[in-house]
Length: 114
Image 1 (cartoon, rainbow, N blue to C red):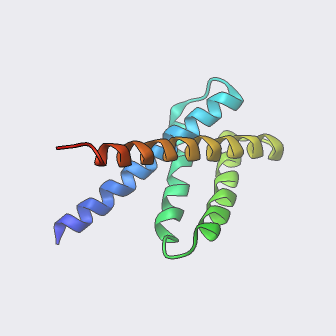
Image 2 (tube, rainbow, N blue to C red; image 1 turned 120 degrees about the vertical axis):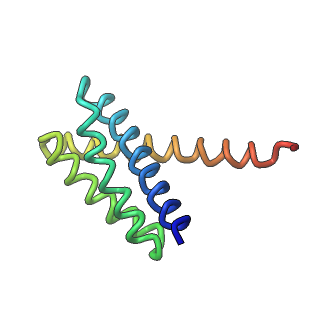
């Protein structure tokens, strides 16, 4: 049963990559020039939460991951509450926009003739 484990680990790593890239975009937008390594430290948290709480509804996952994301951003970038809130809001905005775009692109490519 190596295939399901490989698939699970691969999906998790892609999720960390996605959230890391979107965290870096959000942090650069709000804070300016920041190291990308910090963004990937932030990206691990929403990835773990989305995997751990996938059995629950989206409202619970969003609430828990947004709260954890806020505190992770605050700790990793050493920010005040207000600034961390702005970065968190930017992170979720960028994640939603990029996620919807990728989803629609995959759906569109799925309808292409073979």
